[in-house]
Length: 245
Image 1 (cartoon, one colour):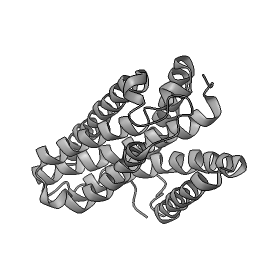
Image 2 (spheres, one colour):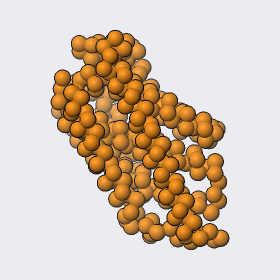
Image 3 (tube, one colour):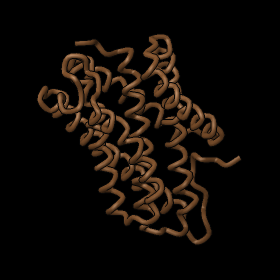
Image 4 (cartoon, one colour):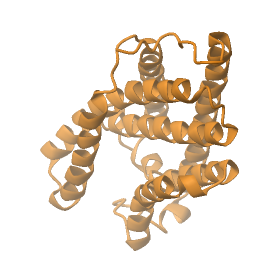
């Protein structure tokens, strides 16, 4: 079993050089992710705290989405699949621009939370999510345990969550909503650790080639994965910690 805590020497490349490159790579991943979260928060707050803007997408009283609201809700999901299909044809700069555009679309999609929940509870949930995410990501980065086997089960869980969420839009069952929220927290907690370890091991495996274009796009893809883990963890925790307006 591979030891993921310390990079092993690759032919012609010193371990210290790999470690230094890995630190720079992870800093790029977390930095890009953080900027994406700021873009999402800014767009969500700008739309969600403005009744005139929010009414373009949802009924201000019931917060039920209209046609544009449904489009805004599913746009990030469509963009994720498009990004995965286009990444090899995009330049690193193009991939980064796409990521920030996606982050803005996500902000539009979740803007309703600023009308549904108090600002204090949103801030508290964000803090709790940040602490949990940091701990899980740190564990995924430092653990000697190979958790790559988690991937298939976690992805199946995400697909199940998406299907169940779409079905419950029409059923409106509180019990199903609660179960989805609980499973969502567990699944995206696991994905946070799994994705962090995968980003690290992918870098180590490709360290010898030092393809700068690959490294740049890999950092953006890693940022996207961790961004999605953070946003989903936040949204599911908000169902438990958020206080309604």
